Image (cartoon, rainbow, N blue to C red; front, side, top):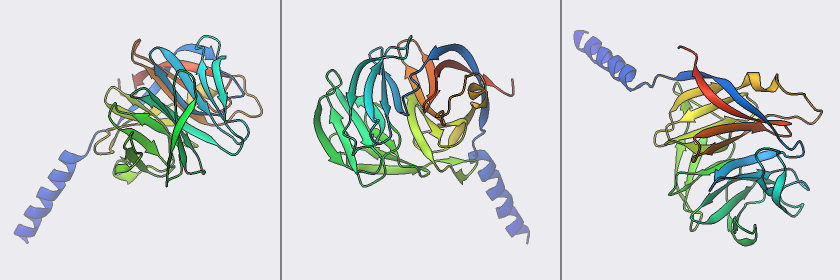
Length: 254
C-alpha cells in the first residue's frame, strides 16, 4: 500500500507540474473604428501594413482590402454565389481563401485578387492563419490542422484543450507573437493557444464589446482577429458588426 501511495503521489505531482496556468484577460478598448455592416467577417489580417478581410454567406462572399479608418473596401473581389468564403491569409506571396462546404481552398494573387489556382480540402473550411511556414486551419472542431502551403496536404493536427478539455467550434485564427489566437464560434471569447501542444494558455473575455455598439438586426457573433506586426496593434470585430476595436489585454488577476 505504501508503494501504491508513493506512485499515486508521484503521478499527482507530475500532473500538477505539467498543467498550464491559464491567464484570464479582459479587453481594454483603445479605439473604436467603423466596420462595414455588410461584412459577414470570416478572415481578418494585416499584410505589409494593409488590412484584408474575407467575408462569407452565399451570394455575399468577398475578398477585400480595407481602409482601417473608414471600414470601406479599397479593393474587392466578389466570389461566385456557389461559394461561401471563410478564413484567409497570405504566405510566401500567395493569398489563400478557404470555402466552407465546397471543399476548395482558393489561391490568389494578393495584389490583384486574381485566382491563380485552387486546392481540394477534405475538411470544412473555417479559420486560417500562418506561422510563416505552414498554413494553420480550423474546421469547427477542437483541432488545428497544419497544411503544406505548396500542396495543401495535411502535415499534422493538434487538439486544442483548455484545462485538459477539448475546445470545440474553433473558428477564425490569428498568429500573434508565437501563439495562435482563436475565436470560439458562438462565444464572446478568444482562446490563446500554444501551437505545438494545443494547450490554451489564455482566455480573452470580449463580452463588453457588443454592449458598446449600436445593434442592427443582422449583427451576429464575434469573429475577426487582426494583428499588425508593424504597429504591434490588435483589432477585433464580428459578423455584420458596425465597429472594429483596437484593443489591449488586461490581466484579471492584476
